[in-house]
Image (cartoon, rainbow, N blue to C red; front, side, top):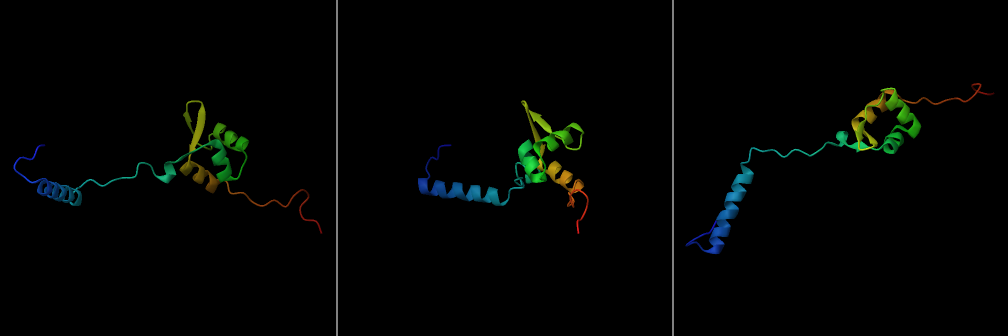
Length: 102
């Protein structure tokens, strides 16, 4: 685009007005690229979030309790899946061997 017969400052001002108008009247709504719930966690991160061992996470994967994604040779779990597993597997406090002592 080559402005002919128009001062540079006037051209720049007109161009800014057009861009501003398009941005103000745009019907496109920007969406986030990925929601935090879609964030992929490593097995260690998932274990820390669930407060269990890495071996327990692998066992839950094997038994189908946790869905996971393989990327190359590594397994990743969606944060949303970890949070739903957390709700289903709430830990209870243990009293220890033999119950209460008195």
